[in-house]
Structure formats: C-alpha cells, structure tokens
Length: 339
Image (cartoon, rainbow, N blue to C red; front, side, top):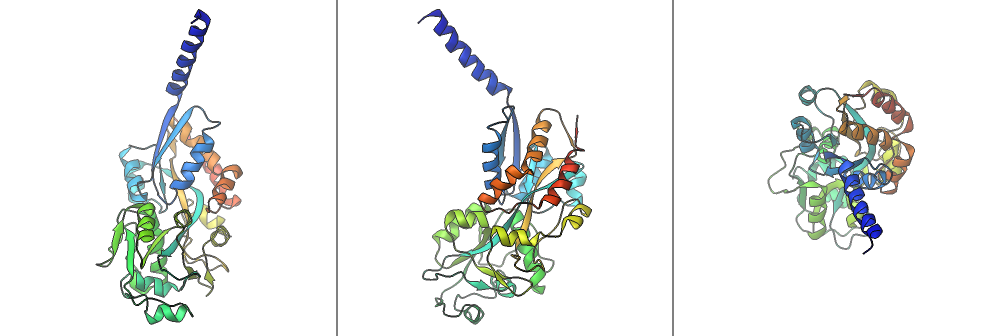
C-alpha cells in the first residue's frame, strides 16, 4: 500500500470519527401520538443539519413530562398540556404546537365493509362498559344494514400515562355526563377492559383480536390497516377523521391559542365538518436553554413550524398547524434564551 493511499485511508477514518464526535445528541421523549412525525422529521432534518443528532423515545406523554421534570431529556412531546404544578418543577416552558392529529375509534369486525357510525353517547357507553355486545340495539340503530355478531365487545385502552387517553377522555367528558371529572392522561377503566402500552400496543391488539375496539391516533390506524368509525360531531354530522376534518377543528382559534399560551383543546369542535376528537400535539421547549444541546432543540423547533416541515406532516395524515398560529409561535421561540 502506498504511503499516499495509507494517509488517505487514515485521514478518512479520522475525519469520520471527528464528524461523529462533533455531533451533539439531543434526546426527547413522550407522546406516541407524535412519534411517527418526529421520526420522519429527524430523518429529513439531519440531512442538512450535521451538528446535531436527535433521539426520540415514544414513552407516552405522561412519562415524557416526568422525564423532562427529572432532567433526563432535552425536550418532551405531549398531547396534553403541562399542569401548573409540573411547570413549577421545570421552570417556564413554551408549548410549541407542531402538528394536529385525530384519535380514532378502531375495531376488528369481520364482514363490515363500511365505517361504523357512532355517536358520542354510544362511544362513551362502550368505553365505560355499559354497551357490552356488538348486537346492542344502540349500535344496530346507528348502522342500518350491518349484521353485527352477538358477541362480546372487547374494549382495548391505554395502560400507560397517555396524551392520546387525555384527548379521548376529554372528548368523552364533553359528550357524556357520566365521564365528567374522570378524564386525564390516566383513566380508571372498567373491569374487563384490556390495557396496552402505547398507540402501537393498542393498534396491535385490536388487529389480532376479533371483536376488539379501541382508540388510537389516526396514523397508527392507517399504518396497520385498521378500520375506524365515523363519529357524530357537535353539528350532528357523521365525520371520518382526515387531514381536512382535523384542520377544520382548528380554524379561527388563533386568538384563544395565544391567550392561553398555545394550550387549547380541540375536541367536540362546533364547526361544520370538524372531526370531534381532534387535537394538537406539542413540543415542550424550555424558555431558557443551555448552549450546545439547547441550540439544537431551538433550531429544530423553529424548523418544525415552517411550511416545509408542515407539508411533510400532512403527507402522513397529520394536519398542519394553521399559519397564523405558527407565526405567533415563531415570535415566542425568538425570545428563548441560550445560556
């Protein structure tokens, strides 16, 4: 081997190692609702941003917030805003709405070709154990022509602290008096329901279990080929979850979003054609960040609300955050301090 070739090889290895060592690792955790979009974004973002590498673990919104409080992650993802008590432990945090999604009611019923039609009242009764059979008259009345089996409904829920659960139970509390005061990231489900971890766990269990029904983020239903129900909205319309019907739920809310520090529930929207179990998902960013990793967090957050990133989100069944809201978020991120 010539000395020149030997030098080139050694130099190439050294340069590669130096490049790897120069990359700063930014760690995030939380929402499984948002995990697919973080995964896609990091892949694309790192093609041009060589100074940082990103790692995100879908641990559930509640666990992500706990990890942020403990200081074991640099940012967190959540579908349920932080409480005042949690913010008191972390210090000031900006809730950056990075995308919008839908929680859908998915099921495993052989021979049912068209999406089931469900009202909020019926969904609430299924998930508190009052409606136990697929042949229940309430289901038959809403779904003319569907031949339901006279079999048990197997209700699948989240067993972990979950933003998806927070969104779903927030909706239930708005449409059913029986659910008021019982909503949150964790819910005391009725005896006989089946708990699974993460959106992946719920979707997987439904897929392999005839007669099962559960709630998952739209992306997971699409990825696994699970059917999902049309849900009656506040206007009385039966609406399927889609990028368009989720987007409709966030129209005209900019002023209220800004007033509330970008924290807002979109469930049971009064707008025409709005899907009623829609939600924002947030990236939690400290108002004061350390230099180094903090720069990586801040730069990514600014990029995530730009048109380029939002267009990517829409391609995998998330709805883009309305631009007037993103413009206001950009102003808030411009005030973040690096120390």
